[in-house]
Length: 222
Ligand SMILES: C[S@@+](CC[C@H](N)C(=O)[O-])C[C@H]1O[C@@H](n2cnc3c(N)ncnc32)[C@H](O)[C@@H]1O
Image (tube, rainbow, N blue to C red; front, side, top):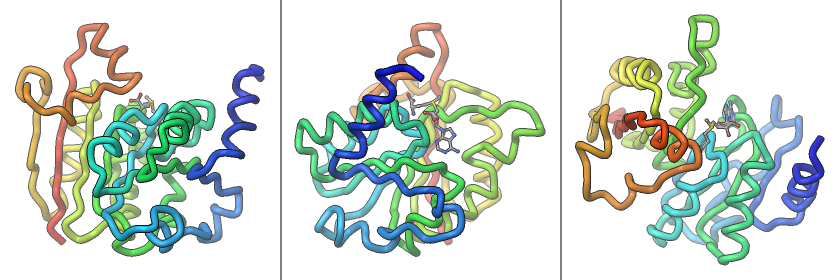
């Protein structure tokens, strides 16, 4: 175990607006479920999640851009999430928080209608039939999101992986809703969007390799 990782894990425990449910999350609801507005953000503004946030570039940047919304970055890897958590604490970005857990347990963390938008930024593509159920846009995950996402909630997906993107389009197409944006070459097709121009750690790596970025925005109409 690297010393740096241990130091970051220790520091995470001391940070405000960083939540790390223990293993009870597998069977029990997290204590903040249903109380994010009142207990954490102290306002009633919409809550937006970033799933598999890594270092949390979207969570931090969106929070700085949209003061009238709250943002929660979620990832299982504490040493990565530490980067975003450090930034929100140092810069007193009060409308952002981080939650360290597996997305598999997300319904234990949020109550009905508590969330209005989800960003999925460069998720692990989980190739092959045996891993299909692990994809964050698999129907089993979408059904989990439905438990807390508002009826006209929005999903944004950014990925370099074309098969994953096409899989996600097919998966989402089974639900009632509309694709507000759909592009297989984001930076060629949409040139003037400050939000879509935010680049994550992994995104920068894929762009340097010359890969194209796929993006979709889907709004459910349930
Ligand atoms: C390829 S990285 C992308 C990170 C970041 N969004 C970026 O673009 O730089 C995928 C991230 O998803 C996280 N992740 C993958 N599956 C997860 C799951 N089931 N629950 C929570 N985090 C997960 C990993 O820990 C990793 O940080």
